[in-house]
Image (cartoon, one colour):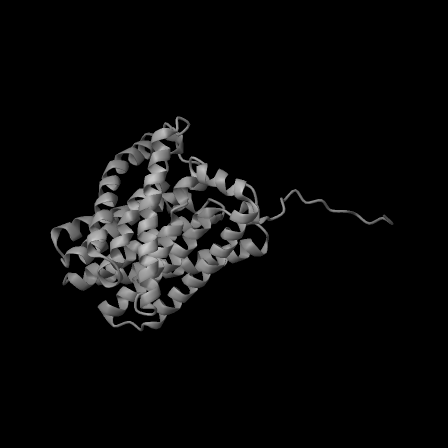
Length: 329
């Protein structure tokens, strides 16, 4: 009309229908960093406000995302059902229950009664999610090696997160049950995942390469949970688990040149919680073992992980402002 040009964009319009369940990884990352800073206040007498601030941010993000995903469930139940049956995305669904457990542990001093309820809901619900997801893996013939990713650790090995709050707001007995399940499945799945990654018969798609960071989380969280359940600090089991976490951190950093070429997307949040868990384990080791080297490693990791969470948060907000989040892949 009148010489005016109409510009047609090929970019799909954002829709709540396409809000991915993987977005709950952001709560895990921010909440996990809160736990790392919380541990730093005990080891080095750091101020408590960074941990508390991060907890309130993580809780706010959880409420906002939770409300949005609940709205998606009501308005687009078919889309939610499809996501929960997807051979790859189903492994991310239990990020919701892990988020509850992390928030419960991080907020145990700030809102103890609510944290206690959240811990039980998260722990029991995550155990149920483990059964449901493993049942899907066992019963579905369409799940092949190409669908195996490090995210498979989330629904089953995620049980090792439960004991973090067991002694303060939960049940040590239930914590041991969750810990045993998580450890056994970690040892069972680790060879399968290394087989896929090392032999290159079915390489991971580039957009899923950030999930390589998930290898850090099981030994790091297992070390912290072991100490919560047993009261042992700096014992051989703790040292072995921390060494494994450090090795996976080193392997991830060695991939930096390749990983930095991947365009930003929500899977970037997969870096945050594992690095936060590794940082918390390093801080715990610095407090338990009389060596300046542990302090240096822990402080460096705390600085790097804090910067990482800030940067990924900023990139996510920018992507949301550009309408790049709730779009079909």
